[in-house]
Length: 201
Length: 201
Length: 201
Image (cartoon, rainbow over all chains, first blue to last red; front, side, top):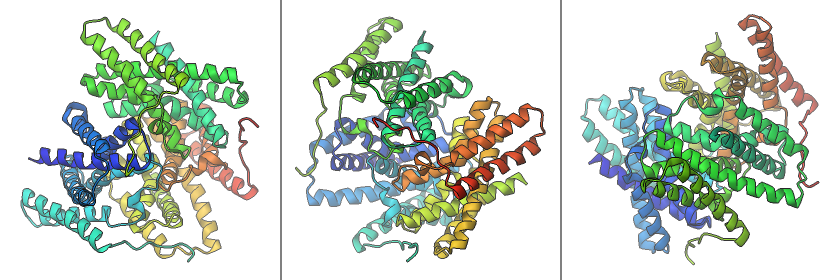
């Protein structure tokens, strides 16, 4: 079950990477690369830092297949209607939530402490997007504005609090996911922003 | 034999990195760094993803020596004549071909599947150039245009087909190299491009 | 003792990353991320390349705590006076020196050769700054100008020479640190630069 959710997250982030590639004017190969790093970059960084080998997409071909299909479909039907764009944002929020919580649980299973597990969950959720932005020549979006990584952190922290309070893992997992996706969607809807400290104002 | 070809590829890519550093106006240290990441960045990423340790240039000082010599020679004789530039393009195509096929064989020896081995071969061939472009502040060239990584992929795929058909490894290896270098040089000569999907056209 | 110096280096580099984030107009989350990658990015890259696991900040929560405190203090008191800026430059030179020498000794303890240990020490000292610059959308400062990495290299080389000449490790370590920090501060004071090879002048 978790596995299929994970693949869904991969597909959504692959679409997001493919759209970024089209906006940056990359060719078809660049589109596939950007789709792949967006979809699996965060999890790959997490696995390298945790020394988890082999990395998931190395042994399981489904990840790459899902990325290729999602990216090529995006290249073909790239003129997204406003309705589809809205659907994509919802799917992206769901992908963020899934990656944040699955990344946290995977890190916990490696026996590291709570705060590091929270960081690894956040890295899983946002690392791919950061690599996508660096490769397409932009200052990573999530560093500049928006409640994005912050939504992941809030949901993971809630999950960890509920776990520490004795709640079952599955239930805390679902509540964490709802929390991340809910904050993210509310932030889009109401245009929430984090404060920016300014230098020499 | 393979080892010496590998060092030749390192030398060629070090020259390419040093030239990029000079165009970006970096100082002598930046030139050495860019030469090194171009020459060994792709193989290093591959080894990290495959958990192959120690990384080749960690135990064998020849890699670093070759890079230093190639980079300093480029800094000294940087005003390349048109003829030398042409020779460099041929050498670069050969380096691309060598890295693509050796990277694939190394990945195969780690016991991963065909499609992942193809990816690792491609990463070996183009990863260093991507890091070079990111460090010198450019959207990676290979994502934007040109038959470059695509040539590597085509040659690796041909190699894998021939291997699956029962051909000996050495012969398939040589045919794969000829294929990569041939496609790359033809793409330069005839200005072949991949199509770019455009958004909201 | 070494451990506390290491944490001091982490704090100084976290301040440097936070200042860069404020100049780039990032939000509070971006500031924390940039502080963290500047402070621990170099050591993390070194540990990945050397296959040293677990990575120090994974098992020891103090690193993350120091980074958070340093970054938030910087965000609060960001309007640095000229006197404080001068103190920061001295602290940064000290952090550079500490990271260069500790990184070298850690690499030596992994049994690699001298030139690779020198590279790993340099990477420890400057890697975090390079990631900081890439993430904030700039060509890495150290590649462009200044005696910065060069100071680290000179101090590490002096340390290795003294060690080869039979000097005790602790004494060579201290001399190496004084050498790195001294060259760095003199380079700021007298505006020393490395030559830039120019292309097609």
